[in-house]
Length: 237
Length: 237
DNA sequence: ACGTAGAAATGGTTGAACGATCCTGTCAAG
DNA sequence: CTTGACAGGATCGTTCAACCATTTCTACGT
Image (tube, rainbow over all chains, first blue to last red; front, side, top):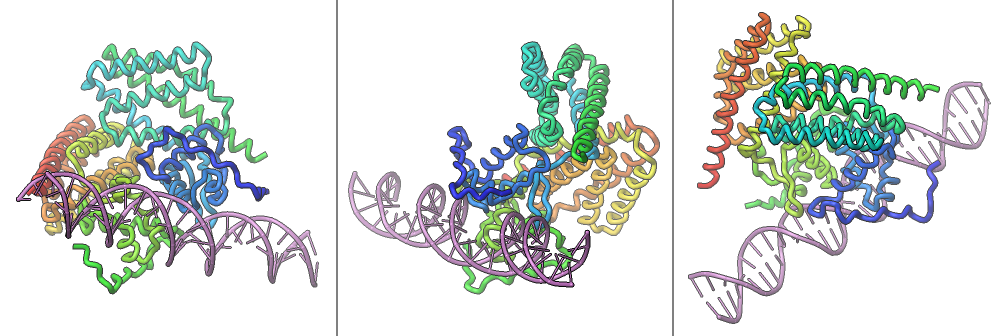
């Protein structure tokens, strides 16, 4: 099955915009993250180092460093002598992730009293962007913008570490969607609810905003759990 | 200054209790983490791969994978062509870390309404342990136990990801103490305040518990900032 | 059919090599 | 004496080829 093409796969050209002050393993990790998030490397796909190393034009050692980073980020899992594979989200993971989201995002809403006005304006910009994308029926982009809104909410807390944590968690959450690329438009349904949360927040209704956000997260969690269950069921057949 | 002992440093024996189902790089990362947290590798210490690889009895490649993990965890920093060094906490880092702690721990207190009684009993156990250690003037152990209490508080939220995040953040915070091994006993001063928070939590006084915890974190942050400032000043001379 | 022994594939680790870059100390010109 | 060029040496980043360990596949004999 592993077609040993005598002609090596064309090494993807190095992106000129790749961070040049960076080491190879990091840029390779970026490339892999990218591929995973766009579903090109579906959950469960084994990450064979020899193959990927050739494909990306780096040595096996470098690629292994990159894969180790992905494992550390929870985007891949590792088994001794069986290598790494793209992480497959389980129901427990979804609950775990949403517990974390509830913690951080709800706290951010409560703490937003201390946030400067321009930070709240940034929130509004994000939602407006998402609405524009949704109106144009660019569902994929709408999902990305919606996520950007939540990212901005977290950013209100002013901790780069929390921002990073949210990013990696969101990346994991995307694994659920990666199995159903066509379902991405379901995210658009949540854009109006982003708007509600945003407006309540700006008008000072923290408690209502928090309640709305909590409901939002509960509903979203239910939906993602269903997706994961469906994916597992589809895999059985 | 880098004494090139012609006789190679004795490779530390492999711990028999090292997770055997694990790959070498992970166990090496554990060893390095250990060394850093106990101050054996002080902040600013360069992590020279050739030297460390020999010392730990692994190849340079394996060691580099381990170091990359530490960098990813924020325990080390990396500069291209200059290698990695143990992270030196700056004031901004301390603010960042405490913003994250406030977010998570305060949320945990508020959310503890939904926590089962035995989870709260666990909190009590941790504090009692810390008190015992403090009474015996084992300050180092008291600090560890106190941290265990806060860890248990976070655990109330029921997210393994948040637990992990708290752990890595706490490990970063230890970098501040690593420069002042003798000051570790100052942590003991906080044990009685842990007791207050714990009791308020168990008696249902969430709001008071949250207020006490917030005050706790504010004071602690101030103190750690002073430590970092002092360390920076001491470095100038 | 079934278990089993090889064989092939893959993973884990090592050691050496080579170029790139940084650092340091030297030396000569000003 | 200061300054700057410059030559080593040290370290880093990366690659490559090899080796053993383990799994997985396959084909064979029963």
